[in-house]
Image (cartoon, rainbow, N blue to C red; front, side, top):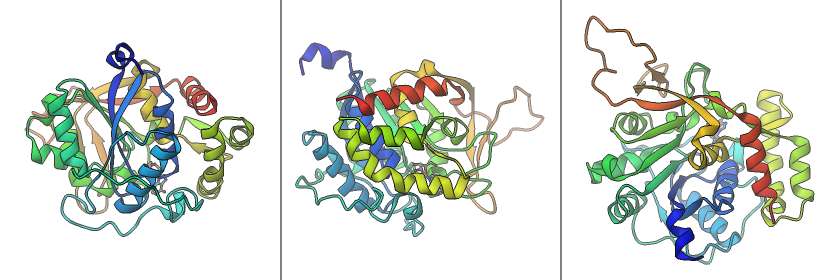
Length: 325
Ligand SMILES: O=c1[nH]cnc2c1ncn2[C@@H]1O[C@H](CO)[C@@H](O)[C@H]1O
């Protein structure tokens, strides 16, 4: 890779809990000439953090990207709670559709995920894009470690939340936000340049059963690899949504970071319900009403919330890149 090309590429850190759609997103990022993936940080959600780290290392090795550092993130939520309910029914107990990936040869680096995030925005101020594909614990911890993190990071693209639609863990909450609502609320209101892609968007970007078969038949290494893990993810969608297609949550978020113009956005303050029945609910203030009394949404920095997507072109880009040789 020559330095001219590297200079025009976005420096990206992917915070991830692989996860089948995370695996698609990571391989897509590696296949994208616009991106220079400078590291992966791992979190819990689809799998426990230790499994996420193993899978992140494995995916780097599969892609011949052993030089990409993997930093293990926090094992618990910001409040120290171990998330017992991992999504093995979505991704299999190994996170990769029960395909039993080989033990990676590489090890995670000595820095923790949050320490790595802080170090990289310090090294490249205004240049690092963070793509967050799991609960937001590592990013929130990075905010605790460095209060200037929001100013130093270029932007943060977050897969999370359900805006004007039901959640996927329960009618109120989407899985990543539900995984650590306190962290999510901290991140959404931290003042950084944030774009949120919720399941109101990602449920429109799909790969059908037939397309999964085509992925397996093509000669691409990533396509052949993914089509072994995808049937598990497909079965979950068939069972849960009665649909002959999978939702491309995490890859859509990587595409948004590559080309934000494929989506449209509304700007407003987002807060997260912390307790009770609707714990994990994302509530976007879309009104311009001047409230009679100050609200918990006042005096916070607005963020961008995706409201429409060019689903066909986003899905086509994902498929083309995963099928590329
Ligand atoms: O029902 C579910 N429970 C938990 N996690 C889920 C479920 N459906 C999808 N995901 C995972 O959570 C993120 C999107 O919310 C995606 O990473 C997806 O793989």
